[in-house]
Image (cartoon, rainbow, N blue to C red; front, side):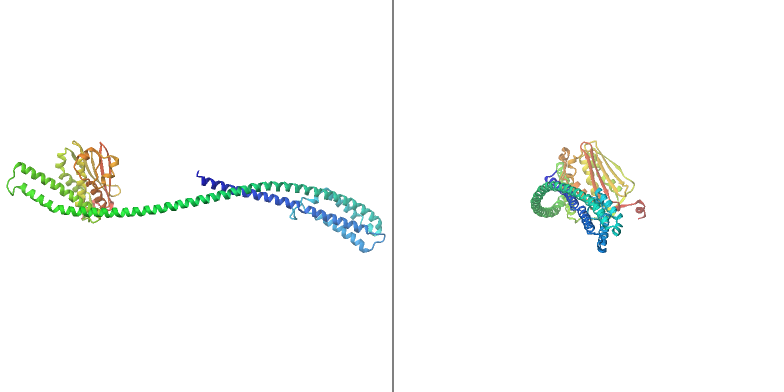
Length: 465
């Protein structure tokens, strides 16, 4: 894992798990503080005050007390009862109490107050006796209440001690949190610095890419200009060569025909060689012109209804002499008629180039197949196969480049300029089709030309035309 990702992960986990722990500790301390400063002491103090006030009111009773004193005793006794009865239960919403009303001492206090209340009728008949009884009961009640006060104080001291322990532990945790926070800040600072360096490096890389892109665009434009200049040069040179070449072919034909007199055997042989070489050179020039037009996008197709079966049969028939000379056989697998919309001259040129290549690179005794088939999806396929030397897989893409040939021994030994297959591909793509080639050295080659369905015409429609 990358160091930056590791630091990010550790920092995230530290923040994720430390924050809830800190919150839980704070809640625990808050609860302890609330209990330590809770309501039990306050309620206990109120009970003690009410008992002392009742004791004072009782001790003010004389042999013939006025009505105000008797009313005061009755009022203080009612206040003490109300205080005892209003003590909150544990978990109530009245502050935080641990259940002071359930303490045994306060039960004793309630019993003493009940005894005073039961003797309250002596106030009218024997005030001195009531004073003695009430004062004795109140001393017992106050004694019990003081025991409860001591117990409440002990419990509060225990809570305070526990709270101090929690605070001590929390201080240690805070120290750990502080160290972790400092480490987190340092880690984030390191990550920020690393990010800034990465951003600077990325910016520099982007600038280099922009410069490289500009260089590539300039190189592409220069290559396009160079290719255009090459095409223009080849076209111009080809046109300039065509004129004298036509004259050479015309004069060689005239000499061969004998209109200027009969030639000797050696003269006739030389004139024949000149004528054959001229025709080969004219074909090369025509190929260069066609390729230049295709690359420049200036070749226009003269589209018409073309019977591919007839075109393939004518091409095989015209090359039969060449196939016999090479001692190879041509087998045709053609339907009676299969028509497409295209340029008949260019379609014938495609098949001628494929057959010429097959004848050229097939050893004596080999077999060449030509088939025209309807595709399942409505398109049309022209398939040319041979049992020739084959092409290595590494050369399959290169042979479709102008002036390129396979590096096989037989390919190097045969004459050729490397324009046949590039022309085939350009002409097929000009018709909207595709070219696929598969080959295996020593076994043979298969070239499949697929014409799109929109160029295929059904037989019924052809007959109606």
